[in-house]
Image (cartoon, helix red, strand yellow):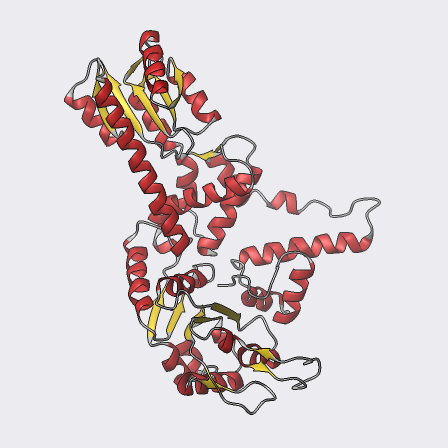
Length: 457
């Protein structure tokens, strides 16, 4: 296990030397700083597992330094020290996020216990966050709405009933489906996914039920469908509201009988797949317009789960921002980058029509484009509103072949359209007046879409 790395900020050289030697003997790596400015510089250059700040410093207040650390988005545990300790000072330090408050002269045993406790709590919180992230992914937050949803997901997972997940684009419907599977008794079984809007209607039946050799042109070998492959596990039907009516009738029969026939075959095959469906459409309204079968709606909607839009739970934006910042910083090799409170406030004020997916993409864009080590309010506003001038520049570059320029222009158009619609391909296709299958092919050809099973919720 790597040694924990500590930072001690104190204005007394003798104390810094003593603490550095004592803590090094205990196996810790220790950096020291003689004031607020040097301490801030060290915090910008590397990450620490725990910090010790003196209250009275020559160039500022240690509690003010603690506040700036918290405002920058760092969650590092901080222990405050003071030779002039009062109850008011201790209360103020704790209120601003200090883990504990120690009076000078320091008792070595008490100091070591405080450090060990802080590191242990930090590890426990990190492990809990990693476990939660593995289960719920981007379904994190502190709002009553998201907590209620997670409770409903936990209860729904224990049953074998069909679940219908509804919500706007980009809210995380596939994440809910994955969490239901991972928390269910079927977790050791397969999780199969089918985007009902991603395939031409004539191919959906083969994808769901499989086909026999010679069932249609190009069927050169037998293939098991999603229902068969999901037996013992979960089948996630994304954008089920876009399923053609003819296929809706066949899906209803499978849900009722729990058996299928492959395309071109006559053998009846029993299947045992728990179905979780998702849509951003109002299926009740679709039923009234004869665009969706009411009996299929009833079969799918045994356990309804509605995901709230991000604008209705703005208090979750800071938590999500820090979550996405950590992921983007690691993926783009910018582990030292931070975000200040002004930038977080600017994000919280945005409407986010693309919901959580839009926030994730925006944070990654900020990580990539921000030149400094701290993302500030101006960076957020530039990213949200400053793209127009760049887009108005000429796409023509002398010496570049026409086909390359066209491909680049198409990529920009599709990127912007997909971002505007939160990455949802069905909505993007409708807005661009394209067939969904053509949009998928074009996006994959331009490197914007890897597979038909990419998240599109």
